[in-house]
Amino acid sequence: MTTTSVHGPETARLSHAAPPETAMPGSVPPALAAEGAAIRTRRGQSLPLTLDGSETVFVVQAGALMLRVTLPNGLRQVVMLLYPGDVFRAAFAPPQAAAHLSAVSAGEVLRFRLTSFTALADDDPAIARYYDDAVAQQTARQAIHMAAVGRLDCQERLATFLMELVLVTGVRAPGGGVAFDMPLSRTDMADYLGLNPDTLSRATSRLRATGLLSQPERHRGLVRDFESLAALTPAAQSLMALLGRSPAGLP
Amino acid sequence: MTTTSVHGPETARLSHAAPPETAMPGSVPPALAAEGAAIRTRRGQSLPLTLDGSETVFVVQAGALMLRVTLPNGLRQVVMLLYPGDVFRAAFAPPQAAAHLSAVSAGEVLRFRLTSFTALADDDPAIARYYDDAVAQQTARQAIHMAAVGRLDCQERLATFLMELVLVTGVRAPGGGVAFDMPLSRTDMADYLGLNPDTLSRATSRLRATGLLSQPERHRGLVRDFESLAALTPAAQSLMALLGRSPAGLP
DNA sequence: CGATTGATTGAGGGCTCTCAATCCGGGTGG
DNA sequence: CCACCCGGATTGAGAGCCCTCAATCAATCG
Image 1 (spheres, rainbow over the protein chains, first blue to last red):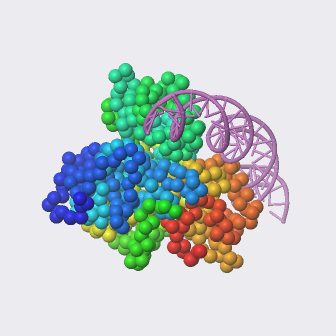
Image 2 (cartoon, rainbow over the protein chains, first blue to last red):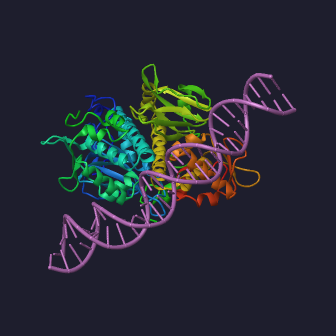
Image 3 (cartoon, rainbow over the protein chains, first blue to last red):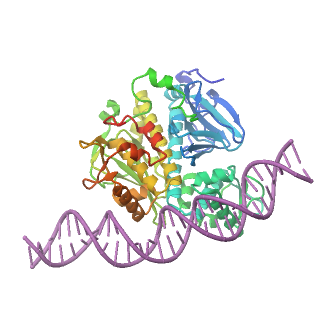
């Protein structure tokens, strides 16, 4: 199943219906989807970074992944979240840091060996372009996340994260407001935001108390007023510019 | 320990080839150096992200750069530091976040238009490989940095940063110990570590008080004992594995 | 129905931030 | 040569925010 075959240049150029400037979810080149090994993920499933010795590359098609590092003293940090359209190369994980890639929700990813992926990219500039644009967008997202973790307080970090989720998975809810997925466990959310789970729980409670956030069910969120949420984080403008083009035409 | 990262189970990989696994400083392909516009930087110089309308790509040859974002409320975060061998593409900077790329020391960078760079990479797989490996290594560094900012206390963050500097610019000092550059101002260091300048100053003072760190001159540091420094941060192992191959053969 | 896991919440302590005063180094002008 | 000034670094005191720890509560599952 794992693609080792390298196509000739004529198979290239399959995806040319050029999307915007930055790679966005859903725009995975068909040529890639045809070559990769499709893997169904279930919540919590671990994705090994090596495939019998060779480095792997993943392309997210549905669901979400997270990269977590665990420092020798047991402290954990979720370093990045990967959404549909994102790419991940095993070398993104720092060595000697107990890096661990896993699915945070059911979904589907494409898996390649690095050598195969590189061959595909060499033959098809569209794939190379796709990969580079996806990585660039992820790096920009990482920059915002870094600023949030480094500079924002507990409440602002939560608001920033919720905006991220809304912009990626949000859909207009019937009763007004926006509904979205909250795939991470409370602990993982805390690890992503550099907070203590207890502290995060308090922040979430405060937000619920204001009526802005509600949780219709486990792993699901609903914000009454998107504008009010955006007003809670200094990173709102930046996030919207980067992830904007809201699935359901949010303001 | 159970590191499942690529760098873990491949003792085989380490043995079979010559240089380190990831792109490292100094290995800039000659073909790139021949095509790029070489730019001398001076401390504090700003590097525009666009060149009359087109996106730019930078390759650091000497010195160091930093990417700083400024949130609307005035909070600043230095998102990444770029050392010789690193690459930067304008799309790495998040939009609407007052992103600013500048030199933190005198040095030299190569500048390209994205279109030119892409054309070069399409024609020469070695260039594509160089770029991808450099980006991957930078992403791994970012992951460590993220864990440091999110999870370590003031003292540990400083130690982590000093290790980073030592591993990148350190050279054995005559009187024992390691001398290295500290190009950032105290304020920029604080912005990089997500700390208040005052707090950082206290941490630095404590380190000096122990005799581990001294500052022979402005923008220059000297650590008595590298091992003791490494013992101060949980990220030591990871940093050494990633940036290891110390210029002067550190332990 | 009881057990277990995870989320919530309270009390207390610690680390970092804030603010302001002081110190230091470098440049300027008398 | 020295007095002066200015920006940045250092340090102290106090407050605030978050972490720690533990008890309580809710939800899931055998």
